[in-house]
Length: 193
Image (tube, rainbow, N blue to C red; front, side, top):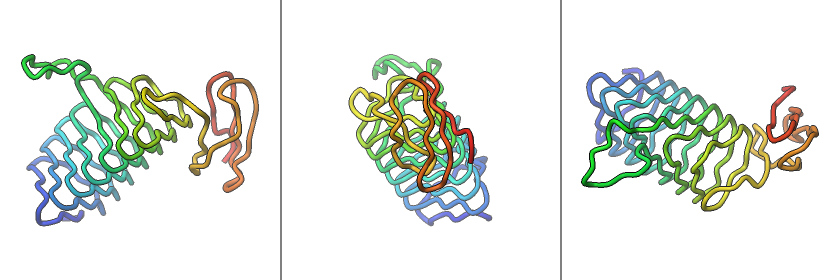
C-alpha cells in the first residue's frame, strides 16, 4: 500500500487512492472514489462513489464529500464545511437522479463551517470565508463572506487580500511573491508569476 490508512478507516474495494495520501481516523472512502497523491483526509471524513479529488488536497475533520463533487489540485476544505448534492431535498422524495455537479477549482480554500450549495463552480484560488453560504458561481481569486455569500474583495494565490476594487481596470503586484494580477471588468487574472 503506497498510502497511509489509519486502522479505524474504511476504504471500500475499488477506491483509487494516490501515493503518499493519508486517510485518518473513522474516515470512509466509497468504492468509486478517485483520490490523488499527497492528500490528507482528516478524522470522520466521508468520500462518496462519484467523487474525484486531485493532488495535494487537504480535507479537514468532519467533511462529507458527496457524489457529484469534483475537487481539483491544492484545494483546502476547512473543518466541518458542507457540500450538498441535491438542491431541494425532501426525505419522502427520492432525488438521486437530480444530483447537481459541484466543481472546486485548483487552489481554492473553503473555510470552516461554510456551506456549498450544489451546482456551483468555485473558481481557482478563491477563498470562501468561515461560515459563508455559497449559492452561485464564485470567480477565480474572489474573496467571499456572509450568508448568502457576497464578494468583498480579491485574494492572491499566496492567500493575502489585494487592494483592487471589485470591478474596473487595474493591476497589483503581490508583495510576498511578486506575482502580478490584472483586473479587467469583474474578473481577475494572474498575468505574471
